[in-house]
Image (cartoon, rainbow, N blue to C red; front, side, top):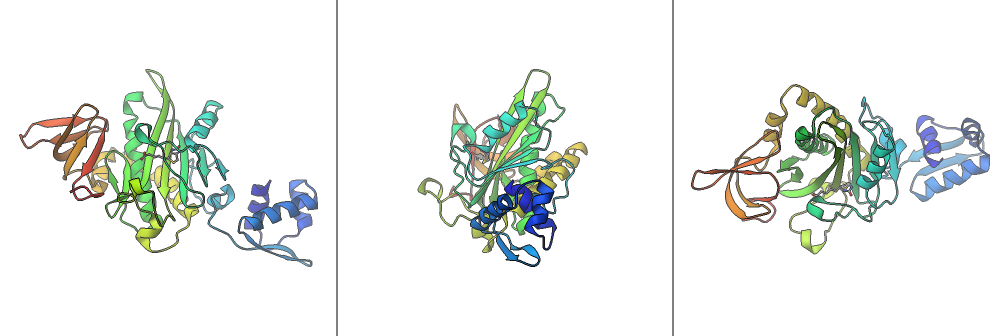
Length: 321
Ligand code: BTN
């Protein structure tokens, strides 16, 4: 019910506790309890006997009503589930998808205790510092085309970060988003499909926003939006811009421009790379990405190799020399 009280406070300049209790069909003391909870979470709410409650300021929160405020999308984020703490937003959204959640459903968390990363790794989302978001898509495509969603999600995040922060967000193959050569965002796509069709795709997006330091293992390769912009940014705004960009990317895909846009944002294509594929490690120059998501690398011998899965270091980025 705290969400409903916040939604009302966001919509009204001043409103009495009695009126809120009537709108929601609850007691005045229940309303008062929610006001207390919101204050504990950092919402500044003035109360006057005569006129009622007035929301003065909001903290940097990912509560659904705050993210919804000013969100002008058709499907992305129409329904938002927001959690203080959860194991993994991807796991939760998969559960909701299996219960029939609709295209565009979003799960957000202020903290993850079991965040999942690519290639079986973990992902850390420290409380209040980052964004953990998972967007549900039910695209009408065969499973072989799902890489379009993977590349498209990276484009949406890069565009969203650019719109919210003015930072020059770029993409490192396949779908890391980097700013000034360091990683700010990781994307993990999980899908359920049969041979003919995709039932759903969960696009899990983890963004470093307020962190000032990182664990030693990633300290040289990771950064946050605040560190790069020297500002304290609004997480809700970043989420809104990414949702808006996701709908824009849908149009880019429809118009057959996905690979052009991907290439224009890529820090990998055209650069010397070292590929750590499951079976071997080799160096070359990344020359292109195909719609299947495959990276084409030209070796010094002139021979080209197709990289379907693996990690790639780009010379000059993230400490790779
Ligand atoms: C990577 O390894 O680079 C991908 C990291 C993806 C992390 C995000 S955070 C939100 C969503 N929930 C998860 O458990 N993982 C993804």
